[in-house]
Image: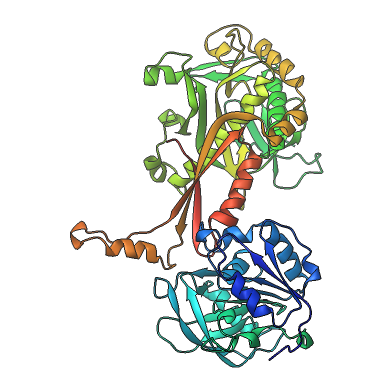
Length: 220
Length: 337
């Protein structure tokens, strides 16, 4: 476990249509002294937090494009400023889509290979050459639950991501799912991931890899 | 040294900047306004001393105002009474005609009474070719008439023309003149950006006073007296308007008849389109459909005068929100339904 004592503050941004916010708070609670939920319309003092998380869900009902409306919301202006100044920022599922649409991460998430909602456990492999500022396990099993979960960038730019340490996790050989599952930025402080670590940590969950993906204070 | 004229038209000529003029980029030309008058496709000809100077100052003023309204224009600055410095462009062969009130050739062509008002205003594209008598240009004519242009370009020119005309209506309203109709032209810079060019003057706009007096080239067409007297009247009214104040009022949002633009977003070719494929799956082979592409449309309505600033912001929204340039293309057009 990365953190045994509860210290620091984490913020979870709540958008209309977020549905993993409560689970995400419960997931962060054992590790942070304070976990605050920030309403998307509110500006907030992001720099007073040690971690900002954009939770999963269907912000704005996936209208226009998954994540695009949330990416333009007032609270995101503070998240963008926080992330651009090195603040640890994690986007899970819809949160990853929001990170991509806000420009904090490259690329865009498009419809899954199945062509419909894809919900199952997947096995992920760490590329071990990523820029990510904190240590994550080499191999994890986590659940995914998305329709627009396939990471896309035109080929020429995609290869650059691999060469420049942006790729954190890829899907291990499984049916109808491949490519990038988790991505970081050049500085390694922003992590976007389609799988849900907040659904795999408690004793009653099928797997407990989730909390090992959280940033460890000593790594930052 | 004699100057090389690169282009000479009926009312203007263009040539490179003379050697004694400095301080402008090499990509600039001189546009000189002539005193010549022509009408009815050059069947009627004359000239009147001072007409060129009138048009130069009126046009400069209109271009300055439109620049303040957020439109990209070719106008750089005035050089003398009849000459101005302009940005060199790749001129489009399209004349963009916008009409608020029926007048001129349209009355005969459509058989409607002069003075009929149009809401929304009427837009037409004409292909510039004297030998053909500048024919009306429908989207289907584009690939035949103008190499390198697409019907989509006409949509862009329509949006630009209509918004420019709306701003000109506001400008001339402040002079108590009605803009009946107008012809505007555009060119493209090296990056392909559309830029307002040519001139905006009583040669290219029909301007009526509230009493119905004509202060434009119809004075010449219909032998109503001195052209220069009429054009000087336009200049007198125009020079009294504070264009900075007017443009900043427009930027803040001056109310107007509503205008709706449609932004169509389509997947780029080659990007997987499962929605289109799913729709194709529902069709029977009898329908013989080979491909379906699914996109989205956004209709955006303005109730203020639509300026170049609004258009630029809308383009920004299309690139940043409505479409993701990695996977989608967008196109803006005027919505008339």
